[in-house]
Image (cartoon, rainbow, N blue to C red):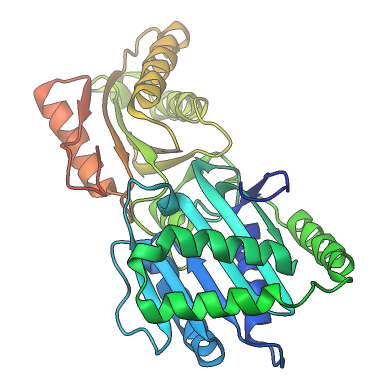
Length: 359
């Protein structure tokens, strides 16, 4: 981090509230200009959601800078400058919002961990290490840092406006009451976080509409950020099992299979039942080796069912992928499982695609 504050762990949900508070402060009526605002959005869909807000900010600010991977967004208003970030640079992982005037400053600086915690949706549970505050000198520090990091990518007019704002801020001492106001804001933020509870499926299993709500219920999600491992699984019972053993027995065995599938899940994972004998596991922030280890545990757990049901030896086929695509390539995963069944392959993979893609 770039200040004396100790970094904290945040979910995206909590950081959204902070970034909106900073943007609202930037829009407030105040005779304390010039105002400069800098924001890094990671990917275009996240900026698109806030585009109208930043159009209003541009009407008040001396200059506004927005950066993201993939190039500047189109149709930016006057005095708003888009910056393209390279996917490999550390700024691509950064979610920052900084507002600065001679008498006011607010800062959010957070770094994407590529991980997720239990939350109502996949996107809202994304984890960041960061810090935020409403102190002018910290905002000044961040404006200087970002101005230096982005200098070669900013036009002369943007650099001049930032330099003028920085010089003006340095002429005026910070207000003595900032720490008091910030303490009150932190109390409100903590109380808001305590009101959030992760929504867990009652039996560990979602249907396909439930998966869509979980992966995109916030209305915006972007490819290229959080990696997600996908496991497609088909569990076939021997031919004629219902006729030989009776429907009631088969129903009990089906519940045992369901328990074996959900038994490998972490609290942040989800399972989707796409057919009577077919499942998909969504495992956020896992790589291919970890996903293959999950498949091995599934094979072992389903194989153990033969101890309780000695006349049933299930056949298991699987497919594994790791993707940063949104929406998740669940149709491709299902096709890979079907291919594995036809070919008699225990575990199949998906072909790599251009980034962001299954890899």
